[in-house]
Length: 274
Ligand code: NDP
Image (cartoon, rainbow, N blue to C red; front, side, top):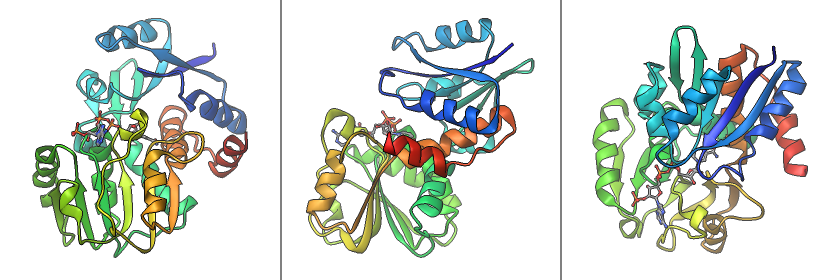
């Protein structure tokens, strides 16, 4: 019987994950189906259990359910524990296992696809939700010069700072609101807020982009996101959206489910062109 997988979220119609996993399955010769499931805001667990009952083998989890997925998983990987968010569920006779491949996806996209080494870089991470939390440790592992966490609700950024500072080694981690970024410069600014989904950009002060800097939006879509448009106007040298991260985190999920690692470059190029 063909194995079933799915991505679950709300909204979900925009998701490119079904196309990505279909491309991975073709490339690796794996026999599987991958669908998109819209769950009501309060119906996540019910939808997951219905999918398992129907023979589902695994799921990707997206906004707004990553915390629900974390709670639902009976066992969790170390990186899911650190992120306190789950984007990949694996179903087996042993129960529901949760993992988080977002951070690895981001670091792989920055390094492999965009050629940006993070060692010694001044990194600004915008947002303090599940997406931000999931990438902090993988970013720190690359030994940047500093990591600044900025969020609209400052307390949430401060809470993340307190939580992750002990794992930061020599890398200073600080937290602030957007206004407090005035007068500082960064080599990489990552937008992990959901602002672009509402067609907005975080209100950042002028002058934060260092020469040669990259502005990276975890959100992706047709054309530039509001964050990337603002970054271009404010002098960021390079712009990238989160499509590469999506493909890279998907590849890691695919590996968890199937034990096979697909090549991402052809899939990324094909989907960007199409
Ligand atoms: P959460 O709902 O957990 O967090 C939302 C964050 O965005 C909070 O920090 C919130 O700030 C901030 N925010 C929301 N609206 C605005 C606004 N108008 N201005 C400034 N800040 C705002 O979402 P996630 O962390 O799960 O996801 C964030 C984004 O990352 C989503 O758009 C998601 O699609 C994307 N993503 C992309 C991935 C990829 O593979 N490319 C992977 C994972 C996520 P506050 O605390 O003040 O409310």
